[in-house]
Length: 449
Image (spheres, one colour):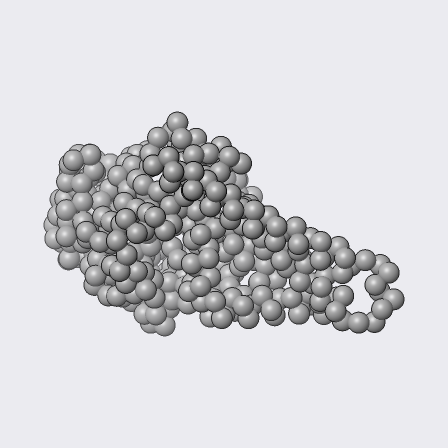
């Protein structure tokens, strides 16, 4: 193990060195290409050199920067703009529960816990999802931390620890909480609800909405499931697990590095990304690029990656994808089974995208069969035709079709609990902006969450 650890440190620092070198090369090219004397030489090469430098420097710099939430002010019915503040409610070593408080507004009846994926990107990936829900909901989000910044002294963090965090967060928010889990956390949100149903039924959420999650990965094959089946756990650990270098607080912690994940994300759709960057360089060279254009908005988030703890990544692959512990209702936390059949009075909804190539149709809807104790009238499923993975929670499909259905689902069961008339949902139009540089990236879901 010491030899492997040493090798991991060299590999991790080598990746950081390559990133840092490219950032420096971009800055150098930008400075040289922008040198005033070259303005006397009417040749486009200098403009292209400066443009390439600007795009390269920005891109490689974003890879180690955690994006800000930057939630816009919410327009109130009184005509005022209400500023949104991000406030931690529970702070834990590996992730916080944060609340988006809308200033000078009474708390909304709909309390939503949005469980963000821990799969290589920060929770800010769901910025547009949060923005679309804020006018009508009191929104809380799980804000996971970058493993490279967590000291080894804080211990391990695997799928069981993740599930315990979810249980604690749901308990803190209370039984009127409406949980929305997107992709990776969907199986563990289901397990957390099952544990609450048995151990603390008074703390169960009111509704559970699972969006594009791998509840049963074997229900429909994708590149993700094929890779998990082809590679052994030993090969996976040898290929992708590295030790954090001395530059960060988590030095020595074994992780699946964000930079390694980013290379796999890009390789899934390399042609589209290449075209997007070439177009951006030419736009900058012509002077038609801008700081807030669609390319920068998308890639500032897409390129910002975080490390996952090795134990979380490996236990996810082994227990969720290979051993199918959730799909076969065999998942245990600290030796106690999270029996999904124990869920009886939580309304469950599943959402899938017809063109989702990460969690294909069939994987998420499997949750409804597992919830055998839930009456049929408390179950709902929706398949969004033509929507990719990203589109079902943050793109046009979410904005125009899925979000209204989710809010109506929440309202229906809030009314059931309160024995009252469902409240009227206020439409927000296009509050959540398109996030992709083009439709193929924005809607087809090439961000692997």
